[in-house]
Length: 474
Ligand code: PA5
Image 1: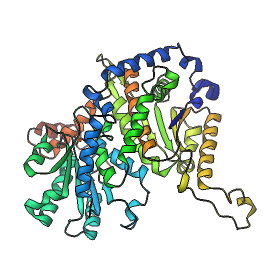
Image 2: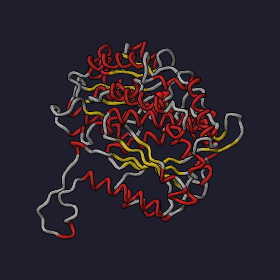
Image 3: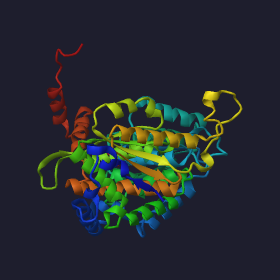
Image 4: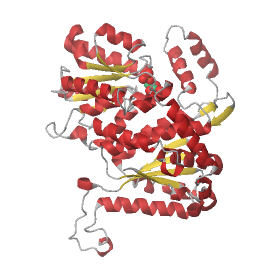
């Protein structure tokens, strides 16, 4: 079971930079507030933008798993490359699952060792990156018969994904012909509406749904994340089991027993009361590092809001930062301990490295290195995490630790549910809408204007006026 240790966020460990334990105790304002939110979340789960809460449970779960497995059974045999086309919430979960649950060297493994195709998640419109991915696919599969393109876009209007899609569609038509090109595409989009839906219907693409009421950053446990995961051999049933188990733990009204409520309460209060407006997630595991990227979007886009639900200006939110242990001990920890005390830390560690662990050999007679010999890398990385946690307590830097018993699909599912539900609690505590992203819109429509999209001409004029050339360029 995933655990959350928040002792280092309390004043008993980090003095004035931590929370008074009594302020979280039964009967406290925080405990009463969290219980009220738990009751409220019971009434909103499965409705409107909280339909993501239903994803690990039937009937949504069995329908999605059945449909995903059916398409995987059709498209996986003979598939050498899987290219996921999407951005933001339509890519970060896919990247995180793949990184967490398959070896870091997955794409380099021989085909007979891998449990699925090589995977590339494009997540940008950097031409050099896309060209490199397409070149790599065509080098091993010149006629693109062994490459599947998984287009993920709820709206179909996202410029980045649309540009990626138009490019691969053309390549597939050149390779497989107008009629045959659909064999290379699996689209994940809104089941009823939107530009991508119309394209899929017209072109005859196989599709899976981005379910109604599930926003991009809450979509990883829907077909958006499940399809590429299942293609690459990840146990999606165990992933959803883990999420369901965490969801049940987070239905507890007692704050001290509810991990999502504690996590949200502690991080939000450290921000609001102790000035820790930067939240650093620091996994001590390369495999778990990209979960921090997924977390960054979830925390930033959900909680960074100008207005509260009453329309008042609040400019709320926290800046999520990712760091990697032990790597960033040699890069960031100097700042983290002696720079501004404006951060709360979320360490993520692994209790048992199991068969992944590696023993450091004995045999070299070098007394200063004797302490390492015969020990394991798992022991070393965990000791370094504990040592850093101690060093942060010494500097009065508050932290919490999320511990994976082992890295597997179940515990990754628990982790995802924990942070999604914590985000729902944090949104309620901050009294903001955690499910919109109004500030993302301006950049999107300005891009449309600059790229000549009909109906958006005024945006080009606005951009050109605001960013008119000046002499301040050297
Ligand atoms: O979380 C979000 O809502 C965004 O990151 C979207 O997922 C992203 O903009 C992609 O949108 P779409 O799936 O409509 O292409």
